[in-house]
Image: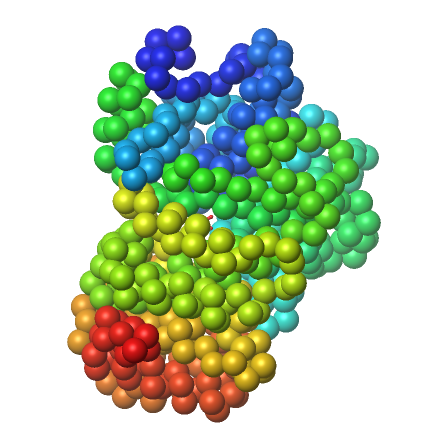
Length: 486
Ligand code: CS2
């Protein structure tokens, strides 16, 4: 089939049918397919085309069967469309995902992968919500419904339950455990994952937790590529480029970055594909989470309140663009750990990336699950700024915008639909508060899962937040941002 493609379409430079799996991946979303799968393909291109190194990926979807069903008839092949300002700059068929499993229906096949001696690495892109962290303690939230269900049921379905069951089997079989690497946007993602996995394991057997702690490596990694949800436009464009239908193409920006904490054991030569191996990922992770992901949140909520639909629409408004830059340079940058990174250049590069008109990154998608993301992306720096006596009006406005969107208390603006794990509770808060900004702020601040316990006690923060919520409700996002920038 690959031979039939037009020459303009890039394709695996190795024999896909000869590619043996060596990686098990949990979470087969668009991001994984446009990021790790591409890095792996590029790493393999450099080697022997007829007998590629055994780094095929077996990916498992945990929640939906649609990716398995779409990729199976295509032998796992799909297209990544790189979109820039000038249109599609590259179309590449990716061949590293050798099989997709749907975990709830194929639990035995998934379990077998853990004890396959060829599985050297297990990676995850399951979103921060799936780590089931108690944001107050930093440990596993044992009461989480997914964890409770797994603890009581025979076959685990949560990412953490699946990992622990798989590692328990590896231990029982006396095998060398795989390296387990989080590729989600969490601060210290490897350490967080290790903690929740050990907490879960300890609920089953203390010795299992000890074994995991002593023998499994959980490197941290920072992943970056803007990958919107696939649309019908992507399918139509892929069909034109390929001359045949692709049921699961992905659109992505040309930029991609992967910084990985060094670990021992066999692995693909991802550095040949541009990945960086470092001893400490923290400086990369902090600037990415606070500048890219933090600003993304501000853009999502302020943009949605302004009636906009995508990140690039937001960036097209000069006042919003100036706000984004000020937010990054004045409020996020001073909170970053010392490093020799050029953060000002990074911020300007981000502005460029967000302006890319080829990428339609929907605000409703970027703003999903704000209650989970608030702590690391906005509140951590806010707390540090308050402690250091530095004003943080841009961050406060972003948090206020989240409160308005999530509670449905949008004042003069149209209501906004954004998924959130606490959606019902947040909407109830909005209804209870009516148009009373002060009450709305207090009720929102009492949501410990989102705000923790420390910040809500800061009177100065509360006062600023009430003011920002009032400004948004009365005058809308554009006027509030202009007021701030004046
Ligand atoms: C976004 C990220 O939806 C979100 O939370 O901030 O998916 C972002 O696009 C990626 O982290 C970029 O690497």
